[in-house]
Length: 285
Length: 174
Image 1: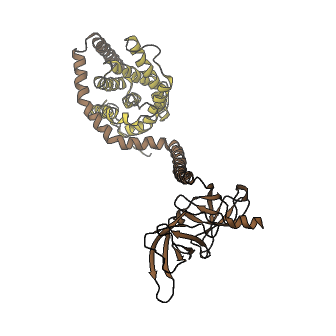
Image 2: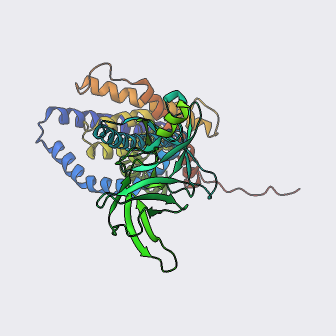
Image 3: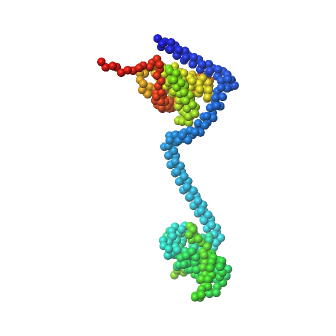
């Protein structure tokens, strides 16, 4: 009958284990923090801490991988949300930049119109360009409902842009001064020599002086003369960049670079008052 | 129990302790990690009897106690009792299916955690109610997952006992 002694032995072992545990617990609880059991515990804690730390470092990537695996659905959702947020913020950023740019442009236009006390203007946005390369036209979002009339001058703070050649109720077509059909009365600001600026479908315009021996120099600023009755006098047009005497012809070739950068135009002012004399005359007829 | 089996169990306890100390904290889910020492103690209680499980629970628990800032001896006591109880409970089931250790580990985990928390309350280390049902169930389920790996591994290592070994012979034809 070996089972009975073995059963007794097992019981004794279990009782001894429980007694040992209870003794250890009691001693541990009753002793101070500097007692032998606490010292043993602290010793082993110090011993295993670096091991635990090392293993933590080793298993960190695996742990992160497992955690990410469990959080994959939420991570995907979070990623989608963040992407939406980024897109939204980017859009807002672009809008803010655009608004800043518009405010800066409006400020410049406002400042210019304030300095031109005798002129009454209405602001307009460029909403279209000429569809072909044979003409230099722009469409603005102001029409007869805003008081815009044919031949009215269109300007920016930099200078003359062109003039209105067609008016709708809510939009108008602007003929830029670089258009080949454009002719505007201008004068040399320094020498007061007058002439006509003609467009040539290019970035520059050609100035034809009234006098053959007009005093013109490279660097002279050209402004509107007011002759012709469409543009008020004194609006900056551009700067002479080339004065070339032609051998074959009588007139000289004077090239003027406009102050306005047409490719960057976004907002313009239409000069409402004074009205072009041609309009006044036509309306009088 | 043969000498080889005893050595094997010692190695298993030390291995479980090292894994518990170094690896298991890295795999916490819902704030809990599996208690590998308890799982091993219960598996040994199923395979080798309640006292063997209790001894393994005591050794593993004591190793845990001296390397953690808890009250020394509590973990050893609770694991001893849980493994012993699981070993005793095994005799009520006439099955060798893996479902047996799964069920026993589940019950032993709940028992051990309640015992542990109760002991801390008695010792004035915790205040009532310290029990968090969700934590207890989470660790129980986690231990169930662990036993699904540990039990088949432990079954691979069998050491025949001298007094129980028998020689099977093919019956002679007449």
